[in-house]
Image 1 (cartoon, one colour):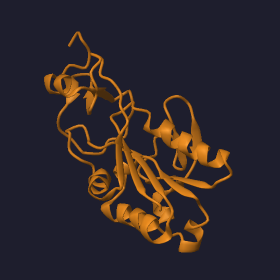
Image 2 (cartoon, one colour; image 1 turned 90 degrees about the vertical axis):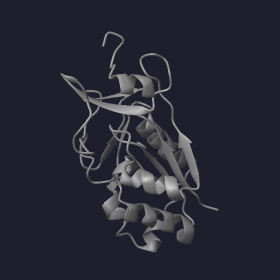
Image 3 (spheres, one colour; image 1 turned 120 degrees about the vertical axis):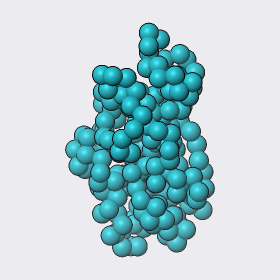
Image 4 (cartoon, one colour; image 1 turned 180 degrees about the vertical axis):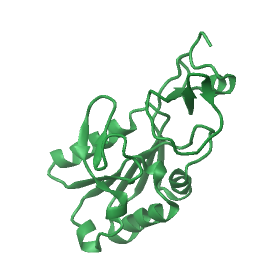
Length: 189
């Protein structure tokens, strides 16, 4: 029985590396896994999934997957979606249809919440309907579990702005809730 999986974590919790390893594991045993991501994520190329540790693979866009026929989707043993927080609720419902009506597992990786600790639309829908939800953990500079994605600039933590601003270590840092609230990006702050 296929399931809809949601693996979430703060920035730096190796979500993309895990997505790429999942694809490798399927293909290593002779199964086909389709890797995709939402079109909005263009940081490392339009049709590339790239992890901070240097792993990368070509992918298709989630918007393309939604146009696949049932026969095309059933050619795969697994669908893997990276940066799923950027998906729409409708796209998440489509992914659940793949699981429920085509019996193909869908494994999603992404952030749960934005820089203001508000759920992203794709993540919100997954929290509501995913069969399995698991946190991938990382740590704050203090050693506690990091759960917050702090957006920052030269003036410190940014508390207002658009929900989506593409960036990586140059503009985001994973913090524990306490240091996020205090605005402490480092012990010296």
